Structures are given as C-alpha cells and as structure tokens.
Image 1 (cartoon, one colour):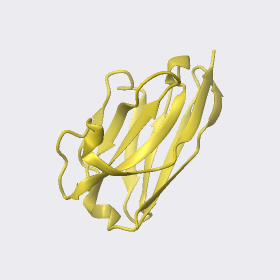
Image 2: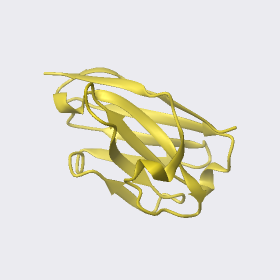
Image 3: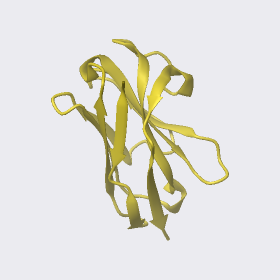
Image 4: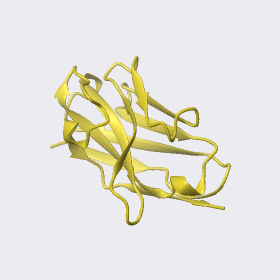
Length: 127
C-alpha cells in the first residue's frame, strides 16, 4: 500500500518562500519518478514539477520555472518542492504523486501518469 504524505504548506506573504515535503512509503521509492501538482479554487488540477527516479532529470511548468525547485532524497524516501518568490496566484492545494511505472518517466506533466496521490497541503500567498 503506497502512502504519500505532504507537509510544509502554510500562509506566506508574496515574495516569500516555502518548502513542501512529501514522504513516501509502500514501494521502492528510488525507482519511481515523482510529481507535484496544484489545484486552486475553481480551477482544474495542474502540473507544477516532476523529477525522475534518480533525481537527474527535472521538469517544470512555465509558470514556476526559475522560482520553484524540485528535489528528492532517496535515502529518506522524500521529495521536496522549494518555492521561492511566491505570488498570490501560487495559492492552491499542492499534491505530490508517484508515477505508475518504475524506472520510466514519460510525459511527466500528465496526471494519468501517476497512480498514487497524497492528500494535499494548502499553500496560501497573501498580497
């Protein structure tokens, strides 16, 4: 049984920073790519960032490129999302997700690629 537990969300002023964490259990973490998605009220869930199983390859949505950094620590079974220069439009519930296939990363922006999701953590950026 795979479990993904996000933490680190909260309220921050525009221009501030937050680090989200996602602790995984249930599968060999180091063989699965991971992704971060977000959903703002009234909007569909959207891709934010992804990282392959080794951490060598990363992918970002244009809206966060240069501000957010995804990383992972396979020894701790944890993936991170460092968020800098936060904007009010970054306000959303942030979800981490695990790819359905080991040792592959195909179309990491597609939600259908991921078969396990966390419960989400709220990030609110005030202006």
